[in-house]
Length: 109
Length: 115
Image (tube, rainbow over all chains, first blue to last red; front, side):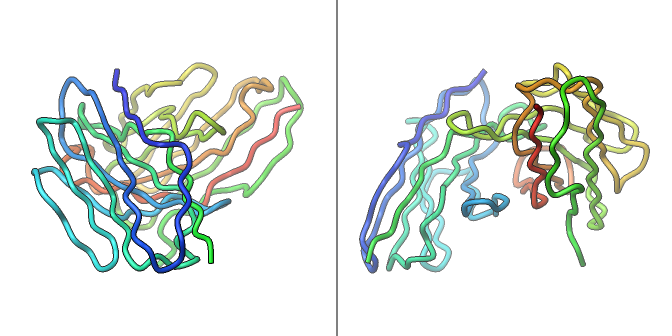
């Protein structure tokens, strides 16, 4: 099995920067994904990391440290539409994603 | 291009009834998946298929069955529904079941209530 931990809830202010952490313990590792899910909608892909380091994609960046079993998603210049759940998921056996329970982010004016 | 479609969008079902949730993708992806999402538990894998003609069990397969007769369709069947199967069900697909750099794309979901 896998253990994937992320904070349940976070609140941040519009225009600010927020970092959502994810720690994992797995028997194997083939990559880590971040997904965004708005209420009542399907998860949508944000980022993928398989090597250590930072991957930047516009306002969103994702970091991975395999030795520490740690990742974070960094959201810059927060907008109200960024209020959503952010799901960390790890793939080890190669057939499916194993998801954390998600972090619900509320962006306030 | 529709991507992944699921039907029905929502359903209320009496306990003991049989129900099939439909999932169709038009991206010619090899791999398909079924997840359920419950408050406080996150997304959990029910069944998967790495290619047409093959299926496998995920984390929570009991009470569910799947088939993969062709590339595009991956129906999920509840043979005799129970209230604990009340959930939101998501179908997903990816180019392959290989894992690395294998992004999964999700359908819009089916909200199922079993009474």
